[in-house]
Image 1 (tube, helix red, strand yellow):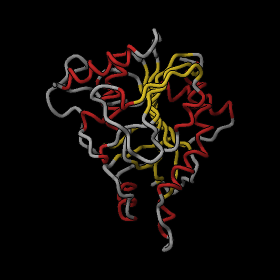
Image 2 (image 1 turned 90 degrees about the vertical axis):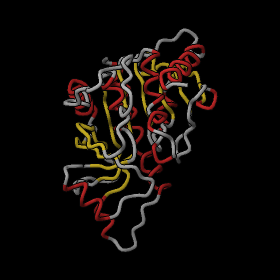
Image 3 (image 1 turned 135 degrees about the vertical axis):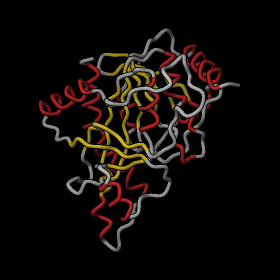
Image 4 (image 1 turned 180 degrees about the vertical axis):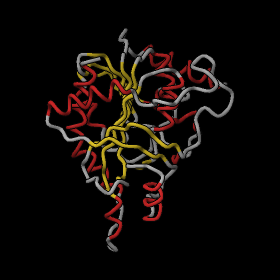
Length: 274
């Protein structure tokens, strides 16, 4: 089966489960951030395992469902768990959910993740608007171009939509929510970064580091979908100076969960203003 056939077969199945609903916004929920899905009203759940040709999320804190319903007064389709390259899936499968949401008809994509703060001014629990990224993962557009979705050489001058960023900053100021704004770098994982890698990422201009997000954003921009991205800072580079420090996956999920309420409020208000 070709890549296009896989995309359309999966999209056709999801459409049969939507009960006539038309999602306007696609949302990708990162590690520990799945509780935003609890805020979606009139939820309709579509497990990934039921969708033809679809990969199944195996990462900690990723349940593996599409949730369709209302958030901020709009119909949304949320990924309760994403697909990571480190799980052993090819990049075409990692970004399949984004292309399926494009076929379904989303007009905006919101992405979130748990990330390590390479910026020495960041603290655990900070929310960082992603203003740009550095992609160190394989590019998901490598291979034959999918002309149904976009051009061979898509522009990436503004991968994260400036207008959405301005709206989010205004909402945060009104709600008294402190925000960082920075550059996210994506690498393969699955091991966490060494102290030397943290220093390297900081030296090339990254404020936060993770193992996801950039392939999804590249594919969304290939299809000319505006993107808003946010990282929850769940561990920080300066902590690695402590000889007893260990980066722990369960602790990262807990830190993300603690910050999820603020991120949920921002997403809801931002979606309401679309």
